[in-house]
Image (cartoon, rainbow, N blue to C red; front, side):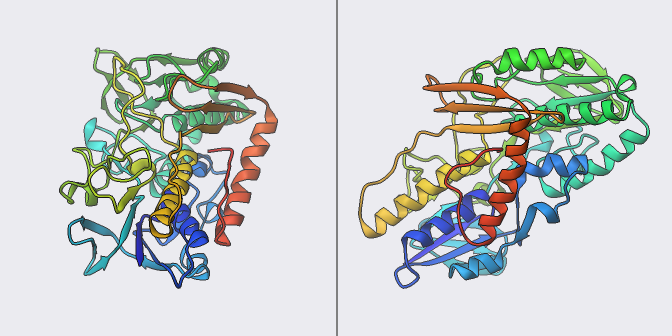
Length: 401
């Protein structure tokens, strides 16, 4: 019996570790295919941009901890999947499977708006390690020569929290250097109100964020559709325009090319349709977790806002996938889990913790609390998570995503 896992980030690593916890090597071979050799704690990329962390501090090599758990590691890019033949095609190889876990993450759709970048246009992005390092250099230049900033999200974005986090952190840093008064900030978002986050709202988040933006002199525009980004401006579809020396914009996301190149596996955007057990709707031996999963939006909005996706939610899906595959192999009861979201927003001089349970309304919990203790909790959890993951262990419940 062989389970192949595509993806070496939160979804793939968590699924592989949990599968091994439930299935001994004598019963099941597990093979993880990843285009990246290193695991990166993606929620800490804003700290990389701000210069308070390096990539080495928030990452580790995957091969050793996987080998310790007797999980085969293949450093290669998945090109396509043949669900009929039950094979994954990589660079020059084919990998057969009995069960497949798709945890391939996303592709940034920078072509959706002219100027989205940084490698396709002038806007900066926190969506990948290389983009975070590029943005870090741009922030250094901005601090040396301050000017107008535009921060926000493009239509169809789903990882909106990173934009808020960066806005608060750059505001705090510039205030500490006494240069914020010469660097006006504009925040633009497709959300119908601040704090929608692709979840239809997060308790008192709207009132909280509106108050914080007002206090910090951050001008904001909601239901805003960015239509063009240049070196010196950001334009909206309604004709508004903002001067900008620095822009950081969250792009819309799609599934990776391997899903597009695998007929019948993904929807037109490359996301994988699943049932309540995170099993593919047509191929019962294929499961998916994380950003790769197709989720409908929580509500209809004037400008498209996609469903909230976080690393914390990815871990929940991956754990359920591992449980359900183990049940398929060894017997037992499948798990259908309602996702909840728990995240900490680093605001530079403090933090806010937000929790939704479940993510889709109506909810049992929609809570927000603030204080420096949450900032310390976020920093501690990053260290704790990396310490555990390097040793081949998972974290069942987490903060700071």
